[in-house]
Length: 299
Length: 251
Image 1 (cartoon, rainbow over the protein chains, first blue to last red):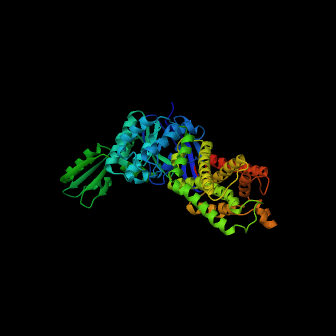
Image 2 (image 1 turned 45 degrees about the vertical axis):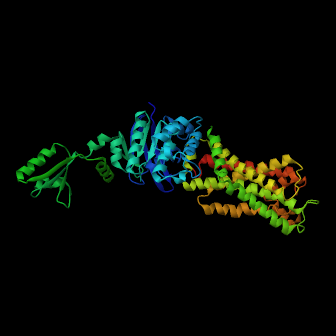
Image 3 (image 1 turned 90 degrees about the horizontal axis):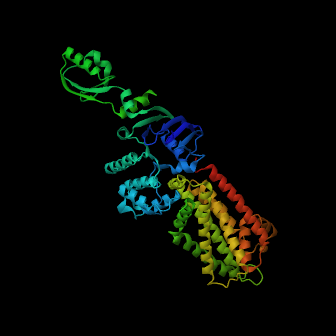
């Protein structure tokens, strides 16, 4: 099988700094994949290596089976990257920027697709406006459009929603989801973990240049901590439940972390036995953010 | 459109869209030099026999503008792209290092030629300029552009900040062009400075270019051509090597 992305034992050193310490992962065609990690974990370095913007110190990386250095032309044709920095060329209008970007990929008559991308990203009004005159959100849309001009099968978005308003964020995800449904492989880095949880089928978590978790999103959610029970009680928490306390909030609410749903039964029984009246109770699923925090603390 | 052609066209548009600053301004500067130096130094400097000083000055000034602008185009475009980060737009597509090199080189040469043609056209109002060997004029014009464009690419790759590029321009390009015999024939210099001038590759570009107009030169035009060609080949190999290795671009 040809992977959309294949990373084999990639390392990257900048002098004494080790940005990547042997990363291996594969992404299958059509996946929506999340690359998560704190700042400085190596996400952008890994993306830069895939894009040919940085060269790996050792190891190999392939896009749709093409080595990013040996067969860089094929690899780069198969990849669209939305960079994290809000960069633009102040000499051109939106349409000029897109036409030029398309030309770099050797595409001649690409007007129809450029129009479609412009429309889908709501850039129609701004198509003939100079890049300098656009707001940050609009510049971000153009960056996405520039990554898509050559219809790459693999699309990498490096924190595309950082500092972006809600409306654009939703419009952007609608469009990206559609591209994913049409068969494009999507790789996403973000610090908004609810976004990753909602969108990504599979997630890799990076810390200090290493992968510390790599699994389907639902497995990660299941694997770590069964559920949370948030209680507001009429009396003191029975002593045998003390070990389950994850958090005591100032407003008096107590949060218990249960390794399993079945434990809810035991909690209820203990409360009944102690004669403690339950004023409020809520059972909550752990979200990806909690899983992320746990994994980062453990590793 | 091929990737190479698009990059060339983009670089062309980049200076053409601001041609008041990138073409008109250097032409005006050259004309001011011509007026001031032509007036102040007329009759004080020995040039070629039978050649009026202002006439002598024109090819040198034209070539100086050509060289400085070819250098400025490649170096400032690259450095600005690196500083603003939009260099990624040309690093992400499947362009080879040769295409990258040629596109930046040719666009910089185009600006050099346009500025040079502008200076010559405007200067024709001031003097009757003979053209003894038009082919030599063309050849040295183009070859000089190519050398400085390649040097501009190297400077653009190397410089991360405006002051680094300014140092390159002020401490290398400016002295080399000013001390190359633009304003005088090096035969008028003391022997030591004549010898020193022969070590300056820009001298051969100016001298060969001038030979095309007057049919006389301080040194053989063939020697000049050989030195200019050798400089171009050496700089091209260096630039291609830097681009292939990804030095300061794909780090």
